[in-house]
Image (tube, rainbow, N blue to C red; front, side):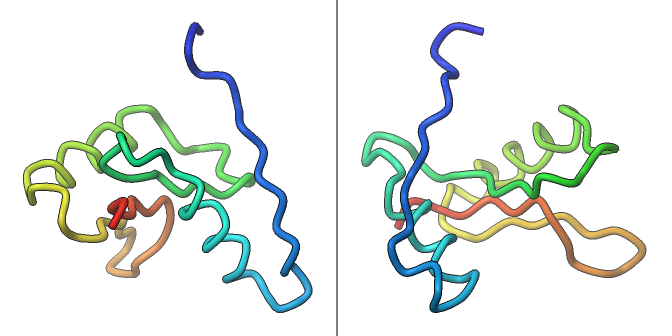
Length: 84
């Protein structure tokens, strides 16, 4: 797909924990974007419909809130973080 090439971000602080990877990735989001969907690499049953529903909810909340999925009453991934 055109325009969807991956961009790899180096996290020099990786030894300080997983949260530093998230911080590095979110910090690299272009200022022109409203937010970023954070996905785990081991989610084989995740569908585009789920991601699209997450994005729709994010924009319904005016892009100001962190939006996350819930399954079986438990919060989980993916999560959509606002750029701010």
